[in-house]
Image 1 (spheres, rainbow, N blue to C red):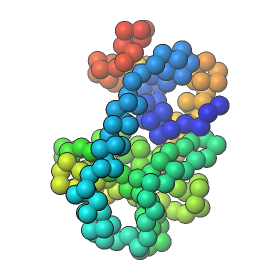
Image 2 (tube, protein in one colour; image 1 turned 180 degrees about the vertical axis):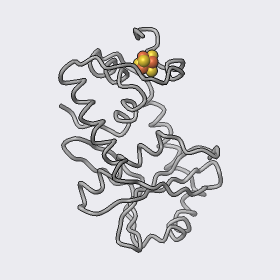
Image 3 (spheres, helix red, strand yellow; image 1 turned 90 degrees about the vertical axis):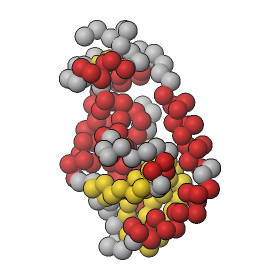
Length: 191
Ligand code: SF4
């Protein structure tokens, strides 16, 4: 079985049935396209480039690694930045081409949880927080705690994802019915 991306895991957490339609029935969805556009925008923001040093200083980072591709048997992903902090722990930093709307989206959190596992697994270090920078809100910086429970959530999601794909297991629908309203698979999904 292929190793999962954070997007695979985020979609599973949104609705396990989404995973079934995409990876068992292989009905395509188009969201990766958006992700690529966002990455392109982030990488070409000159004002942001000038601000990066200032942001790292505010965080208290003592070292940095940019644009890091990390992979394990179970998961793979590209982290915008990995920071070494003064207390010896490490932290992922993700730049969002987005405005901060006074609310931290679960998907952003879950992405950082995935990165935390990837960094810990590949580098044998501790990660207990991550950072988000909202480019369209004048590079607003947000610290996001990452607990053992959060990492367990991702590990359990990977196992459940594999169960669906390897055993053709048809999972329960999400209990949040409003998620179905904008879902790519709403026309084929039996509820
Ligand atoms: S329509 Fe609803 S239950 Fe079906 S895959 Fe989409 S979110 Fe899940």
